[in-house]
Amino acid sequence: MSTDWAAIVDGTWPAAAYQTQGPFRLRKGQGGGSRVSAASRIGEVTQADIDAAEAAMLAMGQNRIFCLRPGDEALDAQLAARGYDILDPVNIYACPARHLTDIPIPRVTVFNIWQPLAIMREIWMQGGIGSERLAVMHRAQGPKTGLLMRRSDQPAGTGFVAAHDGIAMMHALEILPAHRRQGMGQWAMRAAAFWALDNGAQTLSVICTKANAGANGLYHALGMEIVGEYHYRQRA
Image 1 (cartoon, rainbow, N blue to C red):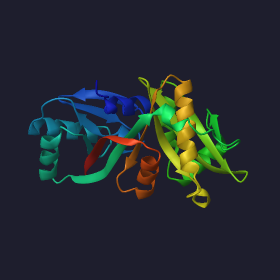
Image 2 (cartoon, rainbow, N blue to C red):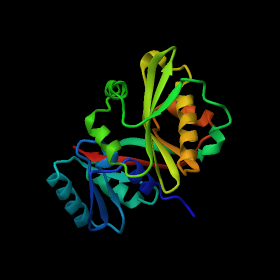
Image 3 (spheres, rainbow, N blue to C red):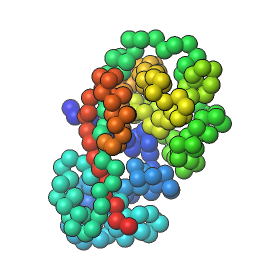
């Protein structure tokens, strides 16, 4: 049975509210970014349906933004014809969590901590992950944790991991500039894999923009495979 990655994203990085508008699922993001604000297709779409979805998003005080997945090619073309621009194409990576538990995490390198400490919030803030995205983390209903990475006895980075339907997903992985290219991303993913297995998730996943060469390289190097993709279309 194929995995419903949209459901995994919604389960681990949830919008503030959802509503059905004709053949669309609308998300109320409250400033939490595209992932929790974009409309997605759940049925056959007409031009009038797009008009109604646009009006509903504007009524929420949000940008007109749609998430396009494989199978949404007709809608993609309709939006392109309306002047919507492509935004942030992403890859979804996954692997069995046990594949990343073959090496022990070095002592005092990664800590599982929830609620987030002040230093974790500061690191996220430096990476542009503010209170609206922290609110997304707090809304996740299933097992979840924050990761605090340390290197050379200093805070080095942070991340958020949540599980839904047996799959853990890493979000908001942020390494401080002074500690990048030092293997901290690898240790974060390995720590997430141990946490996943301890919390009933056999699969570890992560979302990465296609433009982020460093992150894509990391996930490939860890043996993770691309299992899905999507992009947004947004109209100013």
